[in-house]
Image (cartoon, rainbow, N blue to C red; front, side, top):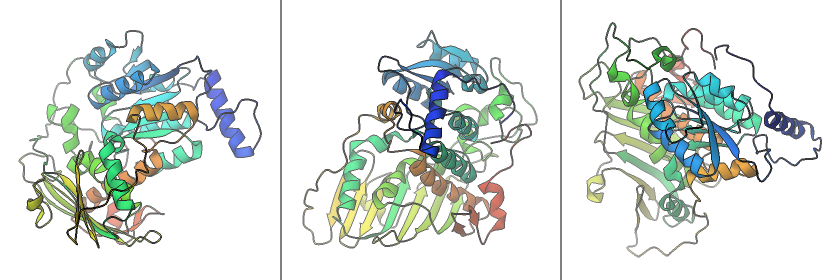
Length: 438
């Protein structure tokens, strides 16, 4: 991160650091604080949050965390116009152009990050280093390496964290996980995940262009390579350029692949291979159609799993019979389960109706509220950075394989290396623009 200002040592932050020290040295403190990021507030003192990014998903996260009983005291955005719109709902909130002013704002318990993918990692990592609880939109970061750095920091700080994969808190996903884990369809060795859509944006590179008023474009670029400003890669359309996003896979993989990751206790793939087609005009190179095959090892008494992701209209052979544009299909040795965000259906090979299974996963109190309650108590969250970071790493590896020509990656997760493809290193960890460090 670029050098900016010193870190104020507020009462809350001191207590958080003291709690972290107590955990490391087993020294008892008079005040019991369950984790380094558990709030040090009295019951009558409200949590305080700062936000980096203020529009679209960022605005939804700010609103959700505010409604869960948190004071939004500071926010930053490189687009003054968008921030002004959001700040109308928070007239007492201090607003800044530079996110580092939010990080330095005194007495923050929570940091909310809702920027484009390429600028997730730096504020998230710095917030964790400063003892904050952190909520970050999916995918957790832009690169596999960034995901691992964030996960390690969260573990080191014993931080309360949550990735913004809101569908994880829906009742339907929980019921599907229960069906799979109860053995309704037996051992699952094969999973298909397909998404009907694909990028349609037509992007153009330009040699120079005028930056609109109220926008700090250099700060928006952050650690990404310098590109002259153009609307085709700004705001939402950044998703379709490798410099800033990861295409449809990065956008939706953490939503749809979340279900098999959760249900089957998946973690690190042993191999990843991708293929795709760029079926759109323009200079942006993310594929419109894509297929990624992941091989996961056995986990305890569960067999290895072959998971395939498809988007842009590609889907598994015979999937048309299900009449689902987007879905997850589990194939077990006793039957299949077809699911999406809001529905599920069990198909048993013996033709019988599946017996109801016991509800073992409580319904969520809400994705944002779950996070806020965990900050107050030091309790767990379901999309913490350990779980969601491993998910995001796997998702992003599909793009790495595609970008080196569809070569299969033999993946060494411990060392963050494709052992057979040194050319993948540049995409696993990319070089930052001068002046930026993680």
